[in-house]
Image 1 (cartoon, rainbow over the protein chains, first blue to last red):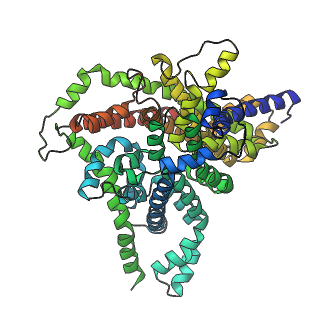
Image 2: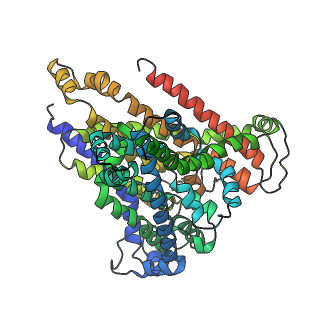
Image 3: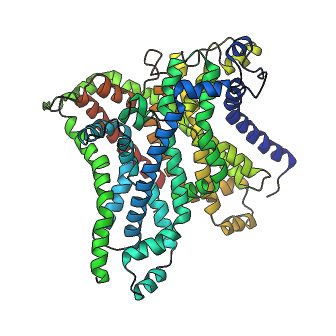
Length: 275
Length: 289
């Protein structure tokens, strides 16, 4: 198609305008997070800070909000959840992707049907299960809720497994390799790209979830980044320069993860949704 | 061990834990919700008094429960706009354009951000006295607006924040789908002299039917199940104007200890989702397939 100069500049105007809307709130946070409390009070929000080397707010945030503790709790929950989630997800997908058996359709249907059940409201019932198991206010409560595979994950993995030629399985069988051996020596290694994608997507979704930790580990010492930010903002609502710093610190890890590993994120979303 | 035996034991051992998890944390709670919706359970006592349809009667007798759904409509409207914008940018970025990867990265960025952080960040934009938006508006002579404190505005402001966060996701899904459409069909259409708009209407849109359906499903369920944004930013205020349905359910259960009533509200939500999804399937998939 021919693109005239006018339509091209129209396209760029739209894209630049959208980018401006994305960056505007971040920019305001950024410039204000470097201001001291007196400086914040005496300048307006669009004034640049006296120095971009003033990290006082960031230090204060770590001390006052116990962000180090929050990050540790978050990492523990993410780490444990990922191990379980990836292990179980690949197992389910291997079985569903390689074998025909009675109930296979039903199981796929159960995973797909789960999406119409509003997860937040069923917590009313999940809550009593967690309490019965004695897991309330432990790291294991959210972990247990995160390790179950969801339909998107299974979809992505099944897609990959279908692309692994079945001849590989067959020739391994001729050599007498057990099915379990085929799973962890052939299938799992070949699933690495899909697994990387799932690890990143899952990390981001757990890191960003507020509701599960809010409900299941409300204890002060068990704060994760989301719940800690909520408490901190509630207690320091007047000190916006501090809150700005806190928000930036909490945004940073996933933004970095995204910038460096976006290839995996895009391929995951595309293959999970499109095929 | 024969492969047949191996196969059986592998299926059982690999599927056991995942299925137990799925049933325990998704289907059992859903079933239990239905049971609890017929009781007056308070969440603590061992006795669950069977009350029949009482909870449902209470809900239908009280208009307030459903009027809350009107607040969710703002998110639905926002979600539709968000999908249209996402589709437009997907088409834009699907063409040959310098810097398209930079724009794709930028527009998707909000999606990966922590929801609580995004909520507070926008609290800073929309604040009446210190907000950056009012600051800019004052410069051009507009009186400060109480964005989050005005009942008729608050849900649209929240819906905008939600669209800001999720537009990029829809866009990437549309973009992926556009790229998977076979190139030769477009080629043929062009040779036959089809115009841009005709290509969009007769080739692109039909080819993306399933993806549009998926995005709409996510938009509808997302709008019906909004929770954290108003919960974090406005706590449902001012005067309950931004309370959403799920927030009401959570409040009824965990705040007022009325698990029976909350369960009935959840069951109704589940039914609404199922009905909406079925209607949508019929509308979008209608012909063919």
